[in-house]
Length: 184
Image (tube, rainbow, N blue to C red; front, side):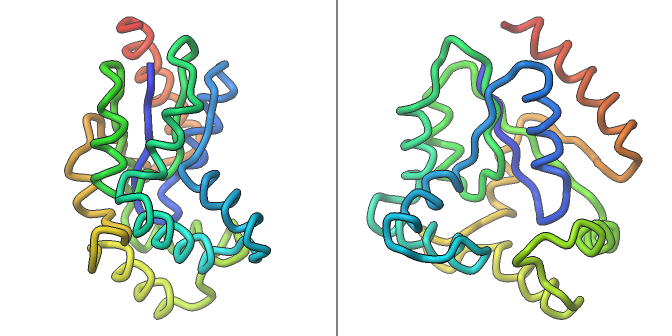
């Protein structure tokens, strides 16, 4: 089984992936390919460089290149979940696998802003105006190599509304896992 997660910043994508990893799944991210490329090019790994690096790799290898690179390394023998799918072409590349499902996680914007402030991750916007600007930039791609979170979310197979507690999210994931396990 191959799952992937899409959603806006601070929606809980990484939390979901970590939960599945704790259940014995393999976890990875399209950003892993970007991080490798940034290291090879002696660039600092931060949000801005990850975003620009993704655009560069997509412009050189096509809009689905990050997912294509992951597919080369993912074993179909072990359930895997991918963090942070950001373009429709990544989804299309992953759909090469018959056992692929895309999960969209949503959270109201003000709650995401609050969670972002609590997590204080390096590279996160420090003020609400910058947060809103980042939201706008990542929502709709200006070209095929850009992030397109709205169009990507429209391709999802499963929707998780993550507006409750961590315990409630884990309970939802347990139900989802039982459903997915029955398909393995």
